[in-house]
Image 1: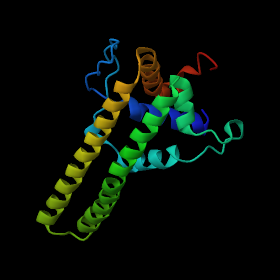
Image 2: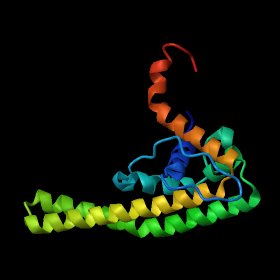
Image 3: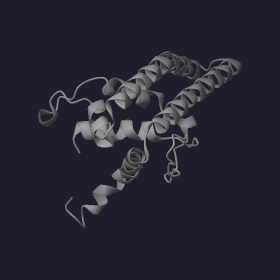
Image 4: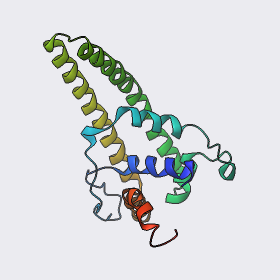
Length: 183
C-alpha cells in the first residue's frame, strides 16, 4: 500500500474510533458496529507522527500535492461545509494534543532517566501517575473529536467511515491471504 493510503487509513482509524452515542440530525444513524480501540492506551509518539503527516502533502508521484484530508474528503464524499468543519475539528484537536504530547515525551525521558539512575521510587511513581493522567487527557480529547466527527456525518458517510475501520483492522492479515489471492 502506498504512503498516502497508509496515512489515510491511519488517520481515518483515529478519526473513527469512538464509542459515543451518535448525535441526531434529523436522520437516524446506524449504531456503530466496529468495536472502538481502548483510547486510554494511545501511543503518543504515533499520534504525533500522524498529526505531522496529516499536515504535509504526499511525495508519492501518483498523488502529487494530494493531502490526507483531501483523500478523506473525497472518500467520505464530504460537502464543502463539512470539509471546513473537519479542518476546524482537526486544528482544535492538534492544538489541544500538541502540548500534552510534548509533556508526555518529556515525562517519558524523565522516567527513563529516573529508572536508569535507580531514582527515588516515590519520584518514579509520581512520574508514572503524571504520564497516566496525560494519557487520559489525550484519550478524552480524541474521544471528543471522534464524537464531533461522527455527529457531522450523514448515514452514508458514516457507513464509509466504518468500512475504513474494518479495512484497517484487516490490513495486518492481508499478507497471509496473498498466498490465496494476488490482491
